[in-house]
Image (tube, rainbow, N blue to C red; front, top):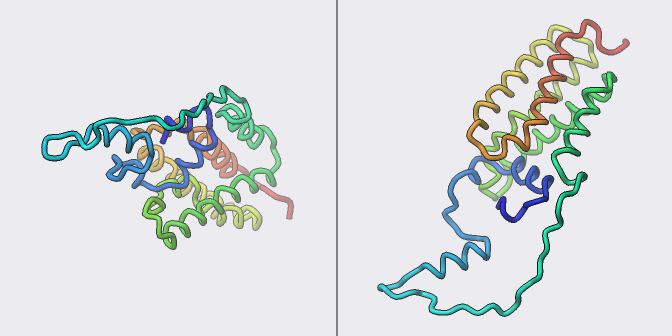
Length: 196
């Protein structure tokens, strides 16, 4: 689907994080109109072409929207830099909360959806529900469990990165990975996080 999402960064990001491992495999069913068209042109039956001629009934004059800062990886990096620059623990908790709830959503969608594409979503290692436990331990100022949970989350991020090494969408999610690692290391090294 990448050719259809050129210059639409957030569409590519959304497609890549919500779908599981099934969409990374070679497609066995054709569902995009241009792919179907190309396959029908090259299909034969009993030695004869299935399609002998094609006619264009409507030719849309589509123009590419071009580069937009707001719909680019640069805007995502800018937003994520705010989480790193601001020293507020509440902003860090918000970041972990978003990741944790997205992870819960991916697990729920994978278990209860009839769409096979949502099954076995490895992005749950990046958007990890353990972040919700980490938030709880940070609020309770439980330094022991903050460190344990942070190390677990970092371990899942390492597994995620190793799995993603041969994926085309690694550069798209890399800013989220880097921000998560930075904030996890920062949180795990704090001596006292929130005033009691």
